[in-house]
Image 1 (cartoon, one colour):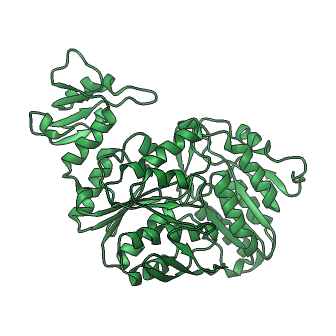
Image 2 (cartoon, one colour):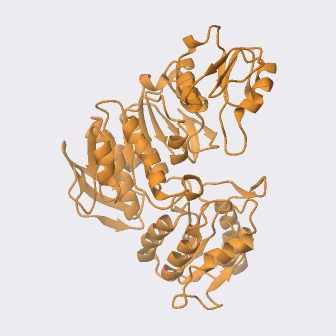
Length: 481
């Protein structure tokens, strides 16, 4: 759909009637709880000059344009209104259950090392040049995405690293974006409250590859079980892997708490990766970003410098303690059983003492992963602290009980090493209180988030700040400053 289908000057495109201003086109989307058609009259009162809907709406004072797919129409109208900004820059879309945020930051760092001003759209923040804005969704609705891309172009950005969530792909928020490349990181259990089953979840992820223009590379993790199916869906697949033969593979891997070092063999030759990021999952993240950069013909020196320049990603294995504490405290966003297992496998060899793991599960989200996370954490941790994540309208104690069902008889911790504390602040205090010399404390689940969702309220809460507060208290009480 194009703006020329609307026979009047258009000043904006909106899907929320409250955001409509004079001259706007209102697109009525069908939501989970409400139907946008119910708000068409409010949109007109606010100045809408046309309504786009999948069904006829009688009695309106403005034209109603009927379409088969209102979400696709919203994406196309938004792209048209903002002048198709993705066609004026290199946009790399990144999808997968885990690794999207780190890969996006790596991609942006590589672009910038190559002299390209780069924007970022993702979970942690939206970045336009040097300006950062709070991220409300990993991938916002189509008009918001197109507006961000337009601002990037207007401010001189020639590239964008964009996380593309499965929700966004299923809801067509990223349709009408011209991607220069698409990255598939992996697929593990998550978001089944929305997608219902893993096949629907995979189909949503696959849409990114299917949407790529002819000739645009799809960078695919061939170690993932769904990798081969992604290859089949791609017009120009470029594969990467650690354990299988692929287009791009690493040489011998060197792991330490100080970072990673390894060679990367590519069709263009071999380059060397040095990174302060830690753990095997970050090898995959580096491979995915490097694969995209190689496929886009970026210079090797920019790729190597970009990988090395990224020192950390907020809330991704973020060390918040220091050498005076005698033990290590890490904040990480791991909130699925697979991500938690990867986190624990990364941390285990680095811990000189015990592994203390704190985590919870979000309320009103996929309940099937709760016992799975309990099983992984209990099997791989020495001390377990089960707490709240974002309980929303669910009873935190009930969520904890469902997590505990995964702690089987032969792995269940006794009272001295397992704690169930619904209050996350008190739980973090306990995890730090019981830590000994050489231990590693993992605060998992919320990562970069600066809030906790309790009912309808977003209450300020920051794992990093809370952990540092209790570390400071412990130092003061022990006489260490």
